Image 1 (tube, rainbow, N blue to C red):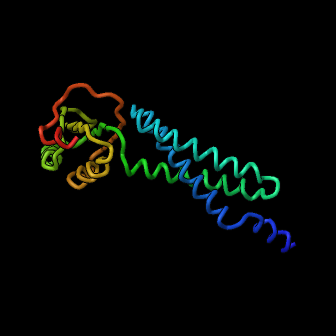
Image 2 (cartoon, rainbow, N blue to C red):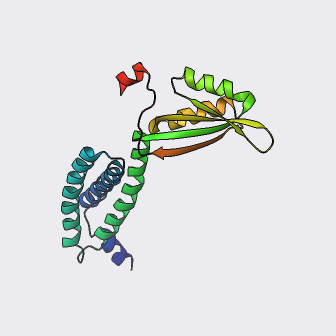
Image 3 (cartoon, one colour):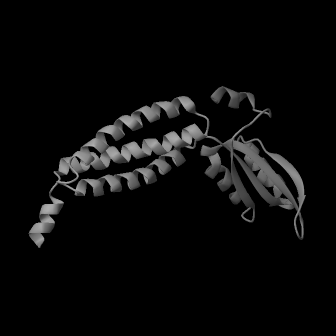
Length: 187
């Protein structure tokens, strides 16, 4: 029995296992990024990633399919590479932070000035709107920013007012508005 198990596990050379796993992880990570880039309207980088993705897929899939009957373990490694690639691709995309977001923070009226000043001092544009909650006056702060800055903005809001309700939404289109001259330079 152990001989059969060992034969099954060693039916694929280690270098081939690592090649299948590594290449599939890279391919699916690229695929995840491509889908997100296209969805965000970044067609040129999305198209380049599509070319790389399909070239990798052709070579990986053909090497797995050609030897699947002799070494079914290749299919298992292919599947593991796919799953890890999806996970890794989403982490990479999260780190890159492609796109824009609108953060809305509902703040107690008394804390609104402190939060607004902290955000503006950090270089973020803030629009405030008077609002009314169940028991007290509130202020809704709206911050439009690059998605990669989301965690910094939320942290800044929570450090200033830990009772703030913070909501973040992806933004697909923006027209008009104010952008400070120094932010225009860094775009």
